[in-house]
Length: 198
Length: 198
Image (cartoon, rainbow over all chains, first blue to last red; front, side):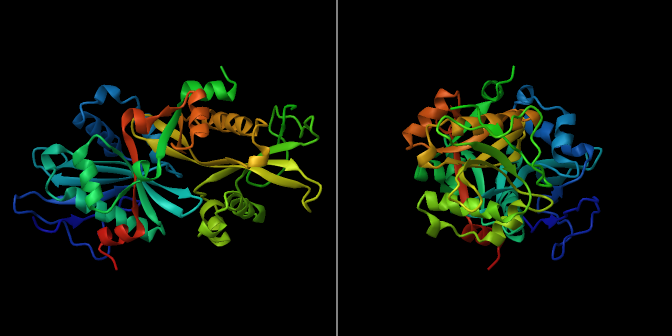
């Protein structure tokens, strides 16, 4: 596969290439890829969430509406950013299809400082094994470094051996196993109880 | 212990009380408490980090400088917010001392929407058992609900049985044990490798 081209529009959705990035490349299979960041409001961003849910056969489990997503991620003060991998597909009206999706945001640890939290990361099954995930991780790592982050945190379902092995090979540490850090959650019902609200 | 009074300055650091909040109360031990939110730049906020590190005997482990903390949390677009619990102490020049500390921010889950992430939460040992932590959790729960959050996430060191028991009694779910969600991290060295940078 040839080196994929990169297009990373800024908030204005201009489609100029990043410095150093080549124009969209075409692979030996005739498939061209684009990895880009979403940061302003437009309809395909919401579709990406629905495509993701459909890929995981969990469309019914998705409680968020398009309005929720637009409010959370696409205003003046977005709660998250997305990175999208696309391939050309002439059977689609847009001429392309989204095959990879990453959602991330910046958080802060009082001991180590700013970090990039990779909330979700997905390449649809038919396009796995083509280095699309590795290219997205490369872009995310560059973004973390350029934003003065000291690390990248993310959750892995430990029973997914393939994912666990992949990230461990890349040098990731399992802080839940090694340092006993477990993720806890209060759901809305408990929040209401603790807040003293009905 | 009497109901503690609340003071929650806004970004301008005005010290008007929140609607419904009583002025600072005094407990039967003669100790008065204040729980307040920090959201703008001022020196005591950085001190809170250093006090926290000192309390945990980890001052040497704290790599962040005051400048780092000010840049991360106290500009136009802060990465985090803090909630502070204070008690009056006439031996201190300021007349008060910080005894509880919570750091939080708002994040986003593509399945459930906006959530409050409680990054750090601490009450110094000499003031534990006085319901200061419960009062802070109440404030944090109210903040989560008023900001349209569906849940509150946080990490617990699973080997700390007292903490684990406390949160479980409050109804928290251990998503690492129950759903296999493990926290992974790429440190800076691996980020640099993946980014292809030296």
